[in-house]
Image (cartoon, rainbow, N blue to C red; front, top):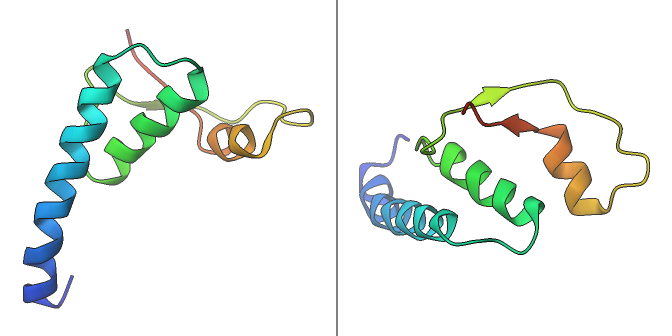
Amino acid sequence: MDDKELSTMLLDVKDKLLKFSGGQLQNTQPRDDYWKLLEFSVIFLGGITARGIRFIPPGATHHAQWMNKVLYSLDVHISV
């Protein structure tokens, strides 16, 4: 980012979001798409999940809900 002042202000927000998302990944999520959204958030913010990252091509989405369509189009499978 070119604007140093804005970059400094956003760094604090980024750290808070990474901490929140990482903490939520430690909890049991009621649905897999919530878990994937949290992992995508960590990856987007420049973090790495505890299980690692591996991208694969998306599968069929013809009956998926809107959130599933987004998540499947960016599908990440965790290395175990």
